[in-house]
Amino acid sequence: MDIHWSAVIGDGLQEASGDAHRYEAFAAYGLLLTELIAFGQKFSAFRDLAGTQTLLIIVDIVFFGLLCFIITQRVGAKNARLIWASAILILLLFAGAISGALQNLTTPNQLPLRFILLPLTVIIAYYLGTLSVLWAALLVGAIAPLFAFYNFETGFYCLLALGYGLFIKGAKGGVWALLMAGMLTALTFVLSASFLILLFFDGPFPSVLQELLRLIQQKVASGTGGFAGLSYYFFAPFFLVMAHCMGLFASHLLAIRDRTPLSPIAFQGMVIVGLIIAIGPYEMNRYHLNKMWVPLLLYTLLMLPRLAGGPKQDRLVWSFILIVLVAPFLFGNPIRYVFKKEPYVAAIERVQKEITPCIDGLPASQALCHYAARKAEELRTLYERYPDIAWLSGLSLTMTRLTDNSPALAKKALFFYAHRDELRDNVINDIAVLKAPVFAFDKVETGNIAGIPEVVEDFQESLLQDAGYEVIENTEYWHIARLKGGEN
Image (tube, rainbow, N blue to C red; front, side, top):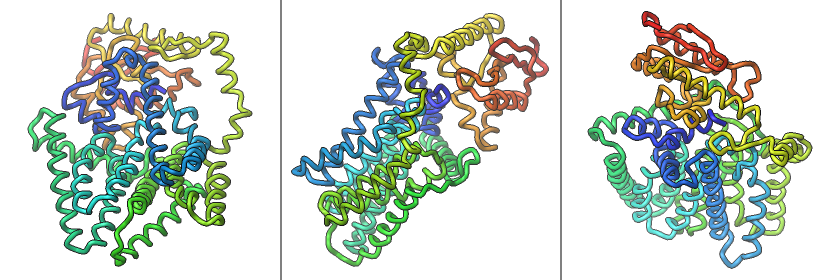
């Protein structure tokens, strides 16, 4: 859990400040997302890690509330029974992923905290459909930088989808309307982005803009080049969804010559199609079955009007696709979880009080509590021996909370960040610039109880070796490395 929490919300939990940390937040999972977590730290109820988990759950509930609002838009406010039925269907299919019950609480990058822009985009699209194309373009340009600052990847896909809808809407009004819409979007985008840059960053505007553009280029390269060498996978229900959406995408383009104005529900549906097509390749590039909930949820929302008002045969076909073809594969056959022993063992341990809230309020087994406490105690001892020591760890968040000492680098989850050679070189350069005389890094045994892979230890050691360090000592939980040429 620690590695994922550090990567996604670590900066927010440490309430970091300054332009350097804001750049890190923007380059990671989003500046405004980080600011949301940091804002939560100002309240005692959310200050410890258990409180942060509560905050994540509150965001999950808000996310589901937004879905219910979308359902009302899609099927009509007067269709109360169908609204309830649709909400229950979405709960049955997606509650495990949305709530974090499928281990997503340990990986916030798969939670609604990251994807909450999606339902907001769908809701906004409905109201944009009621406006003229010029007013819609003005509003899209104004909110676009907010989306990009919250989470760049998700915001980017939302803006592609809104841009696709605006293009169709503008093209139906003629070339002049389309050009005017494009210019208005660009103008308000520049004004809104400039305001956010001046609000959040203290440096000279040109240098801040240059650095943000560099980070955007870096993120685009990361998003299109595969993650850590992972390849594409074949997932039959997802390809069925993508094929249907590509057909709808083409039909929307072919219908441009039809000057009939788009209804709000039609414009909203168009934006949902754009979202699925935009986010689909990214999900394949970051493939995991649990992540498939995002495009499949959007597809369910897209098909709700057909389930509500289409012919009986149509309703039967799409119900069959959603419930029989999609649902069983969505979480890798959820029925098998009933027969797994782990949930029952965890429940028994909690009842028998073998799980205690020892890691800043988060419950853990006695063995894990002992491991974390001993590792933290050793780190405190190392600070007494080496006052200028710096450290790297796959448990950076836990160690920070238990020792009140921060890791050496602003990047909290190095193993996730440095998955390409140029990013690894950035980390080595940061270590070299720091010039700490002594570094501590993880000592990991096989089957580490905290879930630190052995490859993380090897990765940390290789970084320090390439930065000019050599291992001089081993403790029970840490390796100690000294800068070559320095004194012990």
